[in-house]
Image 1 (cartoon, rainbow, N blue to C red):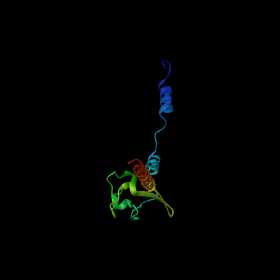
Image 2 (spheres, one colour):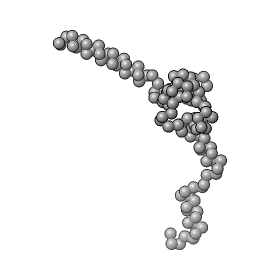
Image 3 (cartoon, rainbow, N blue to C red):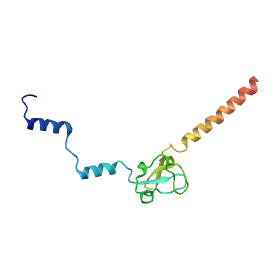
Image 4 (cartoon, rainbow, N blue to C red):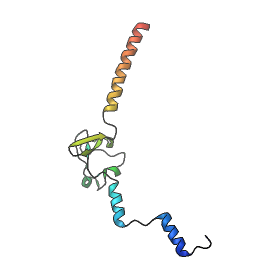
Length: 118
């Protein structure tokens, strides 16, 4: 520490903090944070268009964002890859179906129990 010159300290700082990113690297990093494919509303099939939404990427939209066509919530959008639309942000319909069938089974079991014990 005491015997180091300013050049040695500068080299040491560069090694700790690294090099500054160029503007191109920053732009690539900014764009890579966002899905470059299409986002599709699973309720009505509307394809999200940045130009119609103030030039914002879909991921930049807040929780209050609604589909311009059907007013569906943001969580009903899914990524589109080729001709295949993926799972929505809310997990799709699987949780709804799972809990619906679970509720039906619980109701049947309770009905059987109630007829035998009451």
